[in-house]
Image (cartoon, rainbow, N blue to C red):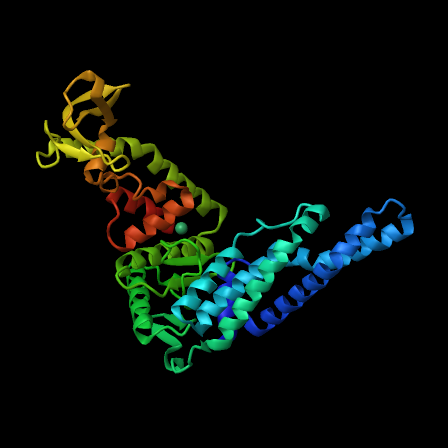
Length: 407
Ligand SMILES: [Zn+2]
């Protein structure tokens, strides 16, 4: 369990994080100790360094001493140890049962140490000037952490029975004492992804472990992710209510594996790139098509007096007419409850107006990018297409294009 947690943390914060809690605490203690020594010595050291009749030899010796003291706090604030400490707090969150108040405190510390580089010293004078505040902060933080660890318990290992759960060709791995319920939800999503991929002849990407992990990655919205350099897959533990999106994300991430492991030749790369360019080329026309369909349908065509709300300003806007603005089809609107005259008239693109109305412009249906995200680059487009393809939601022309690449 311990090494697994280490693996998850190290990977997900993309650093060789230390997640051996006792060892990291010990090292942290040593650093703070060194800092305290410097705190005691600093005033006399500085005074002597600034004295006018200091000979060169003595000055060199003092500089050496200052440097030796400063190494500790400097190293302490170097990115690697910062990541180590952020790893420490994440490990504590994962391995300990914490009171809500303690959990908050540890989360705050994890945040403090995740801002990499923000507290590096420019030079020795800056370091000396900031030192007293730094020392006070370190001491407090270390004391708080020790305190919390002293009164908290490591999560019980009565969950050993479902550390590993079979999910079709995958193994779903419990990395943080998650409940049977959590594991089952993840396994269901993973199994369904395997089923859909196999139905399209892509079972070759369905292998290995999928690590169930806390939201260690900073982006909230990420439900699953793939680390190409390690060929490792993660799925988030708190999926309840997001199973559908998680399935899509899982398929998307396995699409990255497909490309990385099985379609990585120069020829395939250029085919994936070309597919992106072709879709990009037709995207604008597809968008026009999709908008025309909305304009033709009486249910979605704009009508004089229709009210929309601008989500940014929360102002209510009344539809007047369609017109061309800078050659683009636009909706002319005026503010609700204001006299109708050119001075309070505004126009938004017809696309923007449909967005205000919350009417989706389904470009995917007419052969454009399957999502805004797919437009990012050829790789993301490929992964997004794999997701839609497996869920039978891909436009026929794109199915043909994709199947050509998959051949
Ligand atoms: Zn992606």
